[in-house]
Every structure is written in C-alpha cells, then in structure tokens.
Length: 212
View (cartoon, rainbow, N blue to C red):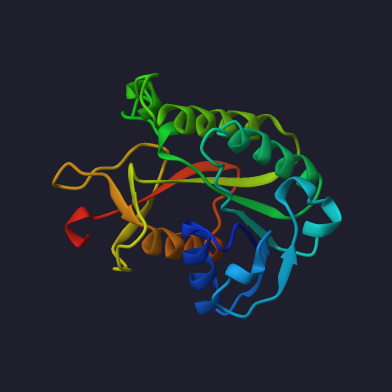
C-alpha cells in the first residue's frame, strides 16, 4: 500500500510512520522539515496548504496528522477542507487524525464531549475547531475519508501495548472510568483500519488505562 503521511515528524505522525513501516507499506513523509525525520523514507517537502491533487494522487492512502499551532486553531478546519477538496473525485482514501471533542457521550448521540468543555477552557479553541473540521469534511462531495478520533486522553510517551479497540463515534471508557489511548496503540489501530477498511465514517480508537 502506498501511504503518504502529512505531519510525519509530529507526535502522532512519527508513531504512524513507525507503524506503517513495520507493516511494510510504501511510505512517504509529507513534511516541511525533513531534517526532523529519524528514519530514511521518501520525502515530499511541501506545506500542507500548497499540496495539489497531482501531489497526492500517487498514494492509495493519505493520513492527515497535521496539528494546528496554538493561536491558529482555525487551521484544523481550513487544512482539512483543503485536503478534502483536492482529493475530491480521486480514489485516494483520506484518513484524518481527529480529535475526541466530536465523540458522543451516549448511544443516543445527543451530547458530544465538546458540549462539556467550557468556552473559557484553554483547550476549547482546538476542540471546537476540530469538531468543525469533521462537519466540514462531511460536506465535501465525492471524497473517500475516515475520521479517526482518539480517546479523551491521547498519550504521547506511553508504550505500545496492543490492547486497543476500534469503536464507533461514541466515547469509550474502561472499567476504571478513564478514556485513554497511547499514540503507539492508536497508530497500530490505524494500520488495522487500512487492512480492514471502514470508509466515509467517523470512528474512534481507545485503549485500556491500566496499561499506561
């Protein structure tokens, strides 16, 4: 499988790169600063907003692990609209590293995690814009996508455990009442998703907090 990873030098992106290489996929890092890469892989050095349909058409899958800088949280939405627009009408599958804010808190899907975050909270701009990005993605016609939310607590430096589950768009908590997943487990979950596709859908990947 030919996979392009946008933001492959970031926290989540680096885990995704490692997991994809371990599965023997043909991986290209789509980054602005290739000198930050710790493994030797083909590189497309380009800003996300400068990417074109021609740049991404060679891939079977493009994973968007872009993370908007603080103070520019609206880029979560604008970047995803750009990617979805240039991939519209192509067979390329866009997998988005999403946020937990858009996950529902009940099976009736009447309340989202975002609804519990005060507007005065420092995480609200990111949470709100990531939720808006999912809504905007759904409005772009003729694009194949999967929006993959992590658990509420997304842990960078926790080890890979292999104890994770792919779920629907409802927040999952473990027996201790915690919603957590390591980025390493999340990345492997995304690889599992590529092997067993779920397309044009919002899903989540959660782990077991006892492991972290």
